[in-house]
Length: 238
Length: 255
Image (cartoon, rainbow over all chains, first blue to last red; front, side, top):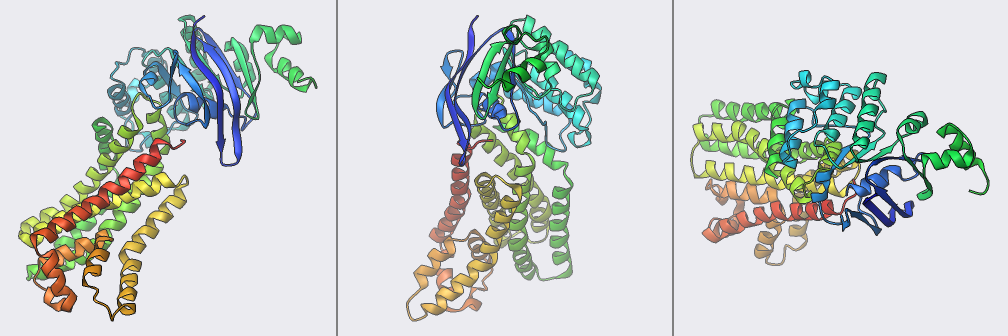
């Protein structure tokens, strides 16, 4: 499989706190990678570095073989869903979509989530009046809208109702079958269990392991990701 | 860049704070013009009020808007657009909205009641003052990470430029009273955008005789063509320099 994102020796600290300590990993297209780890283990910082929101202190990130430092064109191939979506108060949903289309100079190709979440009927609503869950739906629809090669989802199902979360999960699996790379951070292990191909476990800014889900289960002899994780993390060799 | 500006304007124009600011300016100008038959006096009163309110609202509103849109900025950074265009787009968007309020609230009444050289100077200085304080707001917003600190810093800057600075100048004058300070005073004036605006407007009013010897000197310098160009240039510098540094910081900032 073709490597689409390569992270090499990534280092980042905020003040005295080292958030990422020499992280190196590759992501290939056509799979779902779940980035797991306790709070403050550097998951979001890793994602934000790939998106160019956080500027690393050391190391480099290659997107399709090219360094992303000081460039922005590669983001045309990325759809990003933030942990908390927050948009200008008086902006309408329709306006937001139009603005992003304007910026990317791409048309809304994929409207499946828009339809699934019935957002089109709410185009005239302003952002201030929306609930947290609806904002998440807007963010999700926006991430998938331009049919990007890479999807980066930061805690996608937090705040979504069960039906919406299910629709999102199906969408993720569908996009994976089209050969896309999907990076997901999550705390919900049962969900990661259902969708992931690879598990990347971060702990205190370092990669503890990066394995396929099947390998992980085989090694531990467990059927469930949550149990496999507990077993690996509690064994002293690690 | 202009695309972002367009959507920010669409957002701000519908905000109640901007509407309130427009109405406040409009109320001040109309009351002053309608209650006083002497247009020149009216202009002086408006100048006094505007030199306090315009910088305050510009710097506080721009800082608040910047911090409230922090997550939105993050989302913009995840899109294929350079950071430079994001920040400049925001600057154009925010400043055109606040300028629109100033235009409706001050420029239109001045044009109707007191269209003169002084009136035009008042309008231009007001616009430049708005821009320079929004530029300063961008600098405070990019320097700080925290909303409370950012707004605090913005307020301190306003306090410094409108009150403390004059106190420092007075102290400087008393301490060095034995020396010829005329040239130094002109340099000192250039260090404060509010003073630049004030002197430009007042000198158009022929009341500089009331300001004593320094007033005469000001008249000689700022009243001349070179002086006017100099003060306009200085006001432009007050717009460009803070924005330039804000841009430099924003390019390297972690979001």
